[in-house]
Length: 398
Image (cartoon, rainbow, N blue to C red; front, side, top):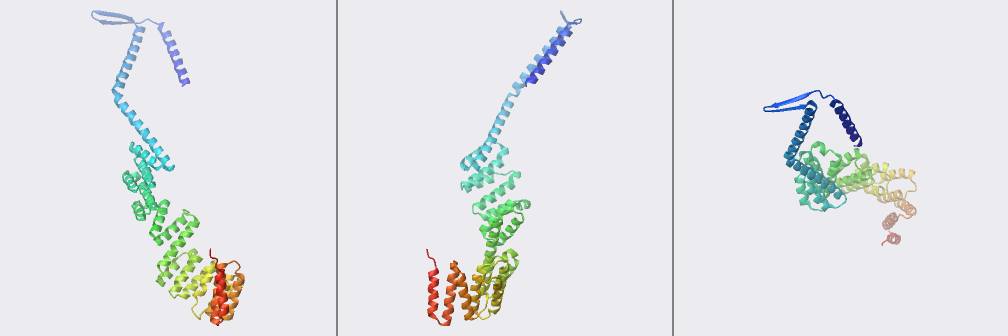
């Protein structure tokens, strides 16, 4: 600003110097005749007069123009002030929303509607604030008021998210369906759909969505494992009355699900209830190849038909070579020998399991009970009673 002033001052000095220099040459005269009047002036004075007249006319024109445009300028100023106030209200609404002041956020969003350009953003902020206050009717009114085409995807996404959060899975899925096909494939849309399908207990869809989100690295691995197992477990239970449907589903699961001890144990239990012992045994054996687990070893003897436990005993004996001190495996061998009525071997395996059980209270209780049943079969009620009493004492009741 100081530099501009210096330049203007230099220009004025240069103009003054030019006028002073030119003013010495006053050889011209200007004669103005309007009968009966006659005016004779110097050329320099005439030029100065023309310049002054022009300046006056210019200033007068600007003044009239400004007066003429005053109402429009005042209206434009007021519009700019309203626009600035509306934008400030929108910023305030967003700040209050994230600060948890939902009532203030909704009020500020309503003030932000003074600007038409804020209608979409303010409507979304107000809808989220109303949802947080559980004012679902007012939330829906705010969402319905957003009509701009550019804001429809955002409106539907927010609507789906809030409806899933409000335990309205049908509404959430309807909003996602209304979105364009490209929008429905967005990661956030699939995460919302996953929550909605969980609430609806559509476990087949849950399984598909979890696998899709895993591929896109949009879900924590631990959460994905839990959801996959939950979905597969419920799908298995839904088919507990149909062995073929159960087996078809089991074969369609990914290897990581089939190798899960929890799911393999459940599948074996359901197959045993449907008298499909051979398939149950294969399920347990396949899972044990990848995940050595006590619950699968407990389930293994149940997969044997009465009097047909020899192949299972042979299989378990092969496992014992690699794990000679595994108490759960010894317990399973003892139960298998009980199935086959190999009383001596059963007693030996069960007593070995009891010796190695240490602080595994659950295994101690089960082993004592198995030994009690063994001695009942042998007619030794005294020793059977001792083991029943030992199993009862092993229970820790708080």
